[in-house]
Length: 336
Image 1: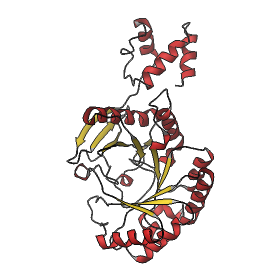
Image 2: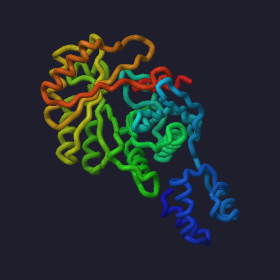
Image 3: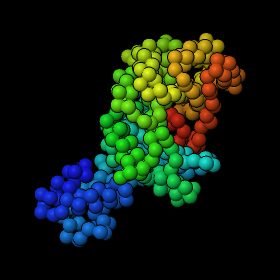
Image 4: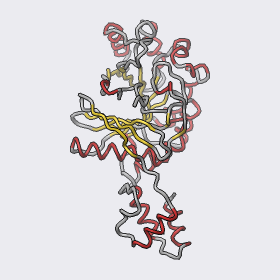
């Protein structure tokens, strides 16, 4: 409920409107899981709330810690469905990787989450509560608050656009966590219509695109939805995004043995990057058991690095974290 709805409810009960402000603060800033804990509200009012409302908070069912410090949460929702979220610590920052759907709407063949059917979208409060849980863990285990958020967990964020935006609004609000939107990155596999909508909505967070090939035939073979959302349409949407936002685009890119590890593939990526300022993250591949996809060798990675740098495109190699607990990119699949 919005603050206004809560205020109106209390007025309808013959109480003061500011009670709605108090409850709203308990729910969002203090992340109360029960009405009993709202200690500046009278016992009678708390009982009345208990009789009229329920707080559908998340529960961290299981927490796993990796050898490299990464923490993975199995998060149980109010209807007993489970999603996973991850805390990725480095020496200077703590990053939350959060989920936006139970399962996924898309069909990327290299991703464990894509093998789960999409059961439902997460609500804004469920997304927000994942961030709160990870922030608490960062403070407890690393003695610092959360510094960054990436929407790279389970699901395609742009297929749950309205709820993701509402969650980010609360995460960045002074009435919520008060985080800067520039510390938030939404990663999409590429839904052209929704990328344009983000630009029209003048969002302030960063955009990352899970690309993996700039050749239509290759990309469709590993990400079948590309047959519907082609590279041509994606590029047009990204051109629109940059024209409206002037915000640099990050491309997430895995190089696989025998799939996209040639000079032709690297040259195609360079051509795709030329139309707007961009950065390429070359991501280490994390196997999902069946061995169909295999990480390319260092020679292929160096071919990409040299080709991109020679053409003035920023490139970084991102080593995966949390592989020993299936917490790395593409591995979130509720194995427990």
